[in-house]
Length: 162
Image (cartoon, helix red, strand yellow):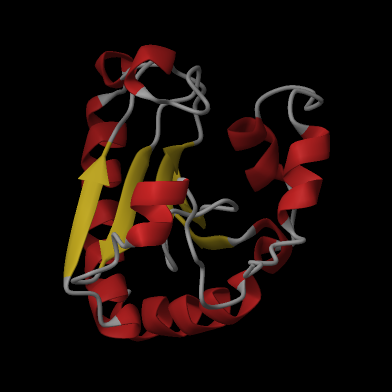
């Protein structure tokens, strides 16, 4: 039997449901962007790596303001989310050499939102063949690079392109 080790997931499993407040409201208050996986801060939004990514380089653009739905965003917040998503797309193409991207917003638990009460946009880099037997048969994703290594690569790409 083959084993896929992912010991970093235990922190997530044991802490699920134990968070105080909204993680998207609390995260940007900290000053250590590397530890919090924040790549870029804007006036209305911040861009952060997903701590539990679908693929290497999975990003999220998050408004600072706590709103559950895009209909509650201001015009400036709308504009900045899309501008940052565009920049994130360029960064991922440059740094991750992805062959495609999925961009999306899941509003509400019924739509698959893990954090349903604070709207955010996902930017997921994709490669031909990245949906393999692990994902299809075992609902398991293989993340091939450590988060801190990906963070370093993406911060450098943001500095170059942003």
